[in-house]
Image (cartoon, rainbow, N blue to C red; front, side):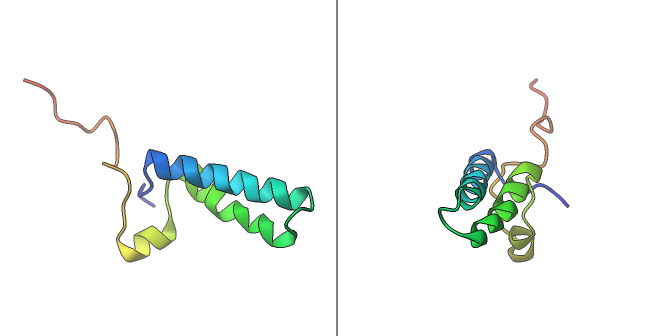
Length: 71
């Protein structure tokens, strides 16, 4: 799967996923908080199946090294 999640989006997803899992493990929000695994994994891998389904991309390009060379 191609990357379609940008850096800021990835950071937000990882933070939210860890927070949800942590709160659930502490017993604060209940077992539904373990659904935080979804944003955590999409943030870690940089690919979101829902984004791919709807054609959304929050990253600039597939690879940051794919820029054209300067003359």
